[in-house]
Length: 234
Image (cartoon, rainbow, N blue to C red; front, top):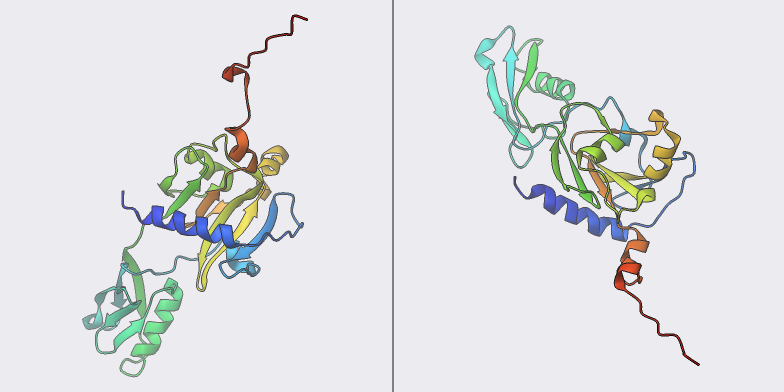
C-alpha cells in the first residue's frame, strides 16, 4: 500500500483543526457544511449522480467512427493535458466523458466534417475511499459498490472508544479544492433513518475526530488503580 492516503489524512487533520464550526440546523444528522477556504458548501457537493472526472494518469481510447485513421489512445499527463493527433494538446483533466467528447469534437471540427467521436476509459484510478482518525482500522479502501457513511465506517472496523460521534467529517474533492460536511453519527444511528445516511463517493475522506472526554480519560482514577484508605482509629 502506498502512503498517499496517509498524507491525505494528515493534511485534513490540519485542515479540520483550522475550520470554524458552522451550524445549519436543517437536518437532525447533518450539522454543518464547510469548504477548504471556510465557506459554505455548494449544492453539488453530495450529488449522488456525479459523473467520473478524468485524473492525471488515466488513459482512454478515442475512436472516430468515420475516420479510423485518427483513432488513438491518450494519457492524461501530470499537467492535466493530453496529446491528440493533428490537433496538439487539450486540457482533459477534470472533464467528464461527455465534456471530453464535446471538447474533442470541437478541436477536430476544423479538419473533419461532423466528427463522430466515442470515448472509452482504458485505465483509470479504481474507486476508493479513505477512513482516518478514530476508526479501528484507518486506511484506504476499495469502493466496489455504493456505501453509506455508516457502512463505510463499519468497513474500516467501526469507531473506537475515543471517537467523537457527533462530528464525523465527510470530505469530497471539488474543482476548487475540497469541501466537507459534519455528520452527527450518534443521532443518525438513533434515528435509523436511511435517508439521512449519505452515500460515500470515490475519493471521499472520512475523518473521525477524538472526543474531548478521551483526552482526560487517562487522568481519571478508576477502581483498577487501587485506592487505599486507612480509617482514623480515633
